[in-house]
Each structure stands twice: as structure tokens, then as C-alpha cells.
Image (cartoon, rainbow, N blue to C red; front, side):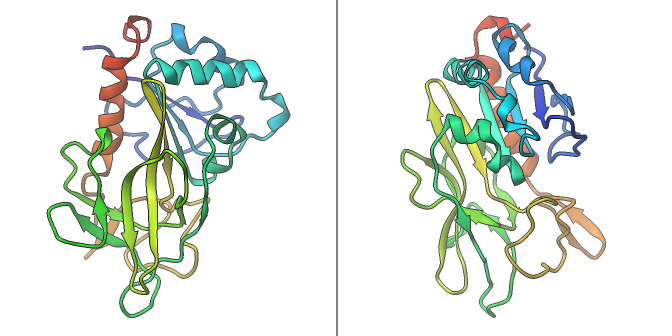
Length: 237
């Protein structure tokens, strides 16, 4: 089995990203743009983008083409928080993104524990990254309704009947881009505070002082596992 690796792509910034402390995910805050030019020679299997570029003009077509080629051979790019506004993500895939003000049946801002086996309007869809995922706590902040060619990962319907695809993927060749619209410290809930939720600890619910992220880490572990067997041998040393 290859060593699984991921790069946190946030130029010039130190980040504490969701999943960064999970086994098999290596964190490289402050990664350089030029590291994207040699992805095919690296052990990188997932790129997690958590922030916007400080200087978008430094991103060249060569960088974009390098990442696209790597994804086409089986790599996965995961964008979350303000990483959804990153120019690299927006150059790679075209998507619709609008705020999602999720409310509960009392019309108050809320998140939801979604149980896959339950008959619910909140759904964990069949997908490569949801294999074995049974329960997630989701606080959505944006939705990707209307995005062409997407493969939903999690969708929700709130107490007012508003529907949103809140995590989805867009295929590029053998790999794909994941668009993660759940709340982060730099992109909190669309409005209001959520009981038991702190955006500094994404996808985690605290009850009686005990935090629970349910099966969230398994999503990214599944992404890593998929890329490790799909990418050419050069990425699996």
C-alpha cells in the first residue's frame, strides 16, 4: 500500500484544515504554486484547498493545466471554505454557488445529524467518498444547485422546504473535484449561531461537552484511498 499524502494548498498562510490531523493526510501549509507543476512526480494524491490565492495573477495556465492533467489521471482536489473562491478551483470547473440559509422546523438556523439509513429529506448519496459513511453532522453555508454534470455527495432540505446540494463532485477524467459547502471558520453559517457548533471545528457537534464528528474523516480517507489506487505508479511510491 502506498503512503497516502495530501497537500493543503493555501499560499502564504498557515491553516488548520478539517481532516489535517487524520492518519495519512500530510499537511503542507504555505505550499508554493510551482509545486503544482510536478504533481505527476510527487506522492500527492489529494489537494485540499482551504483559502483564496493571495495573488491570483501568479496562477498561470501551466499551473492550471498541470493540476487538470493530474486530476484526469486519478487525483482529487477538495475545495472548502473560502477555497471555493480560489481562482484555481474556478478555472478547473464551472459551478453554481449560492448561500444556503438552512433552518430547522422552528425556522431557526441549524445543522443536521444525517443518518444514511433513515428515511429523511437529508441524504448521504452513493459516491466513492461515502463508502461506509453512515452518519454526518452538516452545517451548510452554500449550495451548488444547478451545477451541470455534478454528482451529489450530500443534499439537504430544510424546515422551510428549501433544497440544497451542499457537498458535490465534478468528474475530470479518472479523478474529480469535490465542492464542500459546509461551514468553516472563514465561511460560517449563512446567518445565526448554531447550538453545539463552532466553525473552528467543522462538521463536529458538541453535546454535553463531548465533540462528535461522526464519519466525517472517512469521507476524506475514502478520497485518499481512491486516488492511491487510481493515480499512476509515480504518485504511489
